[in-house]
Length: 347
Image (cartoon, rainbow, N blue to C red; front, side, top):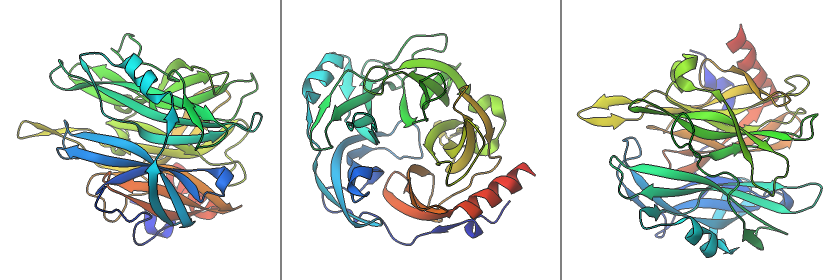
């Protein structure tokens, strides 16, 4: 196995110090219009179960964060979203338990100047055993993060041959030559008693209107890569200035988890790690996934999950990841280190 610490720098400490309100925080998303000094954070209001064992439940809310630097943020007020209650009520029924907004992503449209916020909207189906969820990809838009209005979800669960997949954890692609974005989302495939988190295309003509599901482009079970054989989730793409993957292609982050195991009648999750992948956004194809993870946090017991990358110079940037769904860490990445990892992985 490669000596990964030589390829990136894991920073000491936590980006956000928690307080009496929130023991666990995760999934930071920072606003480029603020110079990445402001953003949104997922705060866990209650946790039932163990994040390493199937069946745990986190209830969440989204709150503002403000930073004195790119590595030190404080938790602020709960983010207000106009029309939130009405949209949620329209999706709720007697057999659905809404457990809060999760996992934010911020996109600022360079053409309109509008700020778009995407987030996971999970509902637990009360009458289904074992516990089952419906996952919507929520959307809100406004002139800035303080003036957002919720719309209908960008993606809603749809019945298909694999059951009822939802969508979350987006990867926003550049506009291709056909004038559309072939974004990536984490979705799901049911295979007998097993469920796999997969990577699926989302066809987007307008970032402010509902998206369309495309094909599944990465199925963990079919790829035979041990570190990502159970679950896969797309992450941020690097700019071409940071890493040139070729015309119409981008190198990016992909989060992956080892296959589940059974222990004492419980389903135990494997290790979640951060890897790299090359995405052909012109044709909607994943060309390559690293055969080994790129980052596993030194303190992680079960999860290292990347949510944001900020380029601080042409050849360097900061990656934000949450560890065990409990705290946020930063890592310094360089173009040289990333390229060394990719080249060694392909050799």
